[in-house]
Length: 138
Image (tube, rainbow, N blue to C red; front, side, top):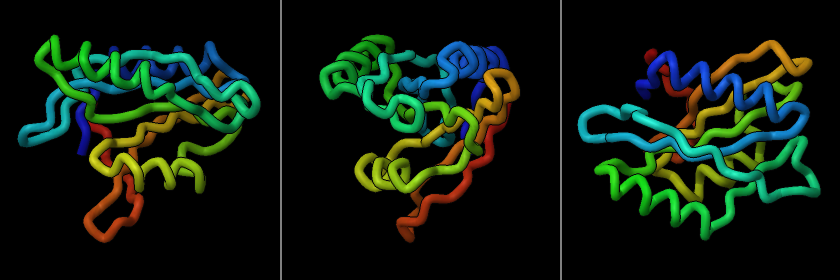
């Protein structure tokens, strides 16, 4: 389970709508001692300009900067988020490959249909190395 405050969920949904028909992406920061709690998020530029409608890419330098920024605030990176324009909030094969590389993170996906209707889900890699849905508690 991942805890995300309603105001943060609403901001993520708005960002996904604003970037439609392209994927937005960013980093979720918070704490993950006994439970994963999102305290803030950092939108980042989608570096994938060729396939921005169905792929995202976070620059490694930007990722490192956001990691340091989180640490300076006493937080840590606990997840990655991105949108799926006109597709459901389920992991693509590409998303699953990312989960295998960064297995400690939650992957929040925001579906945007027609630039307006939204749905949000979270996924993680379990101990059997399967990508499974993770409940979002608001």
